Structure formats: structure tokens, C-alpha cells
Length: 160
Ligand code: HEC
Image 1 (cartoon, rainbow, N blue to C red):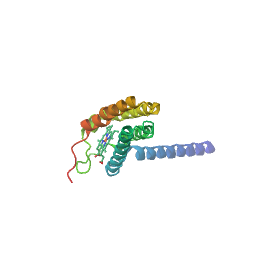
Image 2 (cartoon, helix red, strand yellow; image 1 turned 90 degrees about the horizontal axis):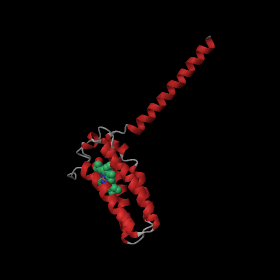
Image 3 (cartoon, rainbow, N blue to C red; image 1 turned 120 degrees about the vertical axis):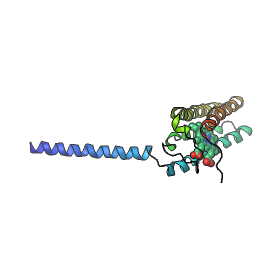
Image 4 (cartoon, rainbow, N blue to C red; image 1 turned 135 degrees about the vertical axis):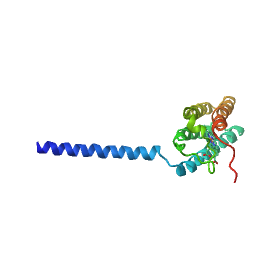
């Protein structure tokens, strides 16, 4: 009787500890503060800008298969976009993110998912070495993902 009560207690303690650990893990992955999230997403977007520039430079130089690595970078960065725009990270003094991001969250995340699938597609097309198809995929990706999301969810440039 006594022993089983003890075991019961220690099992309960283990369960409590496990849930504390899960909660802590959730807190660090989903609840990034605005002060952390704003520079993190601006850095992420700069990486996307650099990868896009590299893609267009290589396309112009006819280095089609070299585009694969940059397209894969975009597929990876696209997965992080959503978590870098946590609820409450609106700050017009430091960020061009529009309030619509949190009002139309599904649409916003849809553009991040579309970037993921178009970047994966671009990598596959570039791997074939077909310049014409790759150029078409590049133009399509820029217009339907980067450009479309910026039009809907990015405000005017910040005054410095
Ligand atoms: C899901 C929406 C979305 C997608 C997709 C997206 N962006 Fe952005 N981007 C934003 C938002 C919102 C900002 C403003 C962020 C801020 O200031 O807090 C931004 C900012 C930027 C910036 C400026 C970063 C800075 O502060 O210096 C660059 C560069 C950029 N994006 C490039 C790209 C490129 C290139 C792509 C496509 C490969 C892309 N973005 C795809 C939403 C998106």
C-alpha cells in the first residue's frame, strides 16, 4: 500500500516534469518576442534577397545548374517565415510588417508554403539544365511568392 502510493507519487512527478519540459519547448519555439522576431525575420528576408540575386546572376551567366543550391536555400528559409512573425510583433517604427499578417494569417502562411513548393520546383528544373524552363520558373517564383506577399503584407519603406 505504502509502496504503491510512493510509486504513484513518483510517477506523477515524472509526468509533471515532462509536461513542464514540453511547455518550455513550446514557449521557446512559438513565443518569440517582438524584439527577437523583427531582426530575425529581416535577416531571414535578406538571406532570401541574396539567394534571389545569386539566382538571377547565375541565370544571366547561363550557369543554370548552379542555381539548384540557391533554390534549396529558399526552400529552407521559407519554412522559417511563419515562426518569425509571432502575434504581437507589429512595430511600425522598426518593421514593415503590416497588421494584415495577423488578420489574414492563413493567406500569409499560404505565400510562405507556395514559396517552399515553387523553390523546390525551381531546384528540380534547374537540375535539368534547361535554361528556358529555369528562367520561366524564376520569373514565376518572384511574381507569385516574393512579390505577391510583399504587395499584400509589406508596408512602405521606413523613414530613417
Ligand atoms: C509570406 C510573405 C513573404 C514572402 C513569401 C516573402 N517575403 Fe520578403 N518580406 C515579407 C515581409 C512582411 C517583410 C517585412 C519584414 C519586416 O520589416 O518586419 C519582408 C521583407 C523583405 C526584405 C527586406 C528585409 C530588410 O529588412 O532588409 C527583403 C530583401 C525580402 N523581404 C526579400 C524577399 C524575397 C527575395 C522573397 C522571395 C524569395 C521574399 N522576400 C518572400 C514577407 C514575405
